[in-house]
Image (cartoon, rainbow over all chains, first blue to last red; front, side, top):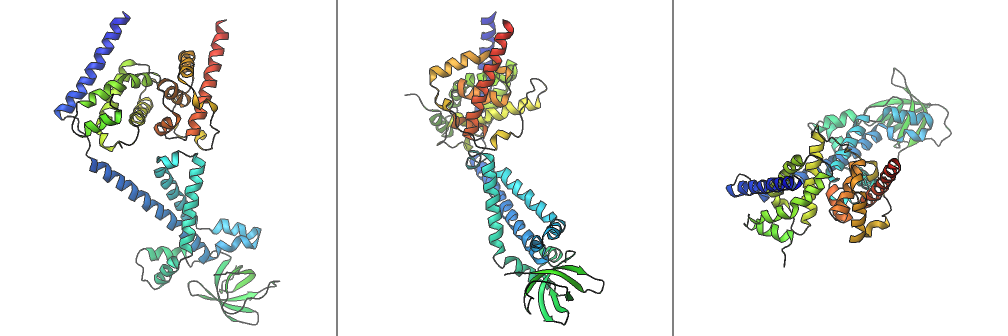
Length: 236
Length: 188
């Protein structure tokens, strides 16, 4: 009985192999041409690079916009500053950046240079490369140029994004330059060009001087006057 | 001198389509053995092996001749079997999408250099207990002891680090030993 079963199985295998060979010889089963694989690889590589650069761009833009609004510097103001940092970070940009980093990692994780190492190393490597790339862009005038051009309406689509994330004030945080001093404080111009009067309450720090780029922490009343609690100089 | 798999592939790509029959003969029983460790129905395994051969033939131009053909065809087989197991109502097995053991490095076990006799011994000892362990551990164990592939080749097939393969093979042996001891105790 067993040998009959084995013979049947062998016959089935033989028939299966014959069926495939017949299909190959009749042209029913064809090899996919090489150019299709080359094209596929080219698409994958271009897609991967595009996602990689978008991730880098988003990370640098997230930090740039946080710097513009002053949110980036709020943790230096202590606990309340850290709370403001969490409250006012452009989280939509942070989430988008994370999505693109994950998308990039999913694409590269099937490559031998990634899966050969423990996943945590590859993940740290990808995050480090993208973050360093983001910071490198941040040190170029790239975002500042687009931001400046967008203020004059010279950047069609992306300019709107720069305007919406760039100059907006985030609650108690204001970033800008000191234009002149007054008896009770100074006149301050923010990144979008708007000016405000700042009243300085008691500060132990050395008072900022005209032209200083600073981040102010303080309430703004309905007349647009800011009551400064603390400030931090931004070193460009 | 016997042609290597890679030379046969070269001949096929040069127009000798009949040579594909030789590759099928070489891998038919190996793939059947591999598939039977996950899917119990013989006919299902035969159908899936035909799918593997068709996929291998249609995608043959994507194969890099400088690489190892057996790793390549086993990768196709792995995907076909995993998809069949995931899709099929029969023989549903638990293949997880994400495994925590690929996250961190593992020290490579000393068992990496098992010789043929030792592999045969372990294979024979644990054969009837294989179905007791989950596919995550069973698959590298089968590829290492039954298909006699090296950790690096298994790593290329399963797309996980070599150290994880070593750790899974070691864990598989521990689980199989436990299962065997339990069975002996139960029979006593």
